[in-house]
Length: 317
Image (cartoon, rainbow, N blue to C red; front, side, top):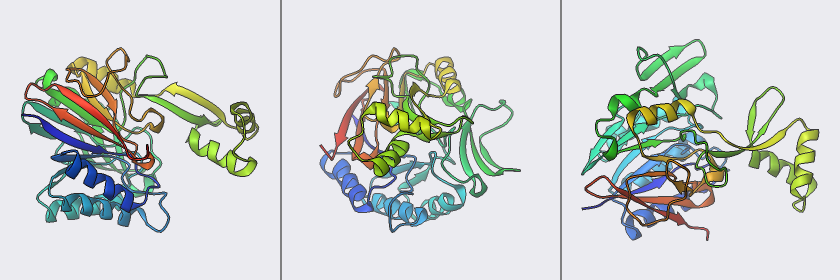
């Protein structure tokens, strides 16, 4: 008997009605019995909505579908805005689960292991961050008050701690592990702009700024030149988390769902970054499943043996 999950992440400017429509398609048309909301859910670039109201709107719509909901924070959520919403729905809805507090979900023939948070943030640290980081094993995952503000910490060592049967374990992390393969196929390829001080901005954001000022007809060479004149170096690189890669290899993890790097949306491959086709069950899959801002969602199916298959859902094609 298969278990079918609908996956959504990385909502930034999409109108809630479009996201709600997608959730209905995932559940009512494509058969998702459970929904995984894998971070960057706050719609922080959607005009007319503040991030907290946006998140509440999306969660309320998902919960009303009657399926199980697993939600975690990514790189755009702030504790002060997000956690009250998560806490409210956790107390009011039996089908909603904040996996920051309970990261292990055992299903039929498989285990989902959630790693909430991110190693890079667009959020304001004064309002609190959901941080995934390598820490000494003595520092457990949990909530901490620090001199930089509150932190909800996920220790990467949890990958090893909670993996009992690696062949039946699927890690769900907003950020991907690092890969060394081709940037043309890897799920951890990022397009970004780097300043001289090594601070980063999404490449698409800088590119859009340049095009708004100078026009859409610019060549790639023109964009690189204008970016450089304004202090940005445009790069495409593998930017996955190296500590997470080490933890995956130690635990024997061969299946993981990620988000975060929009440019890699709907890429799926094996440990050697060789692309994998849709619809075929296998015991190995690394998949950037959703970039909801671009209408991209995912369906994950898991059989009784813990093997997985995936389906890319593009609602703008």
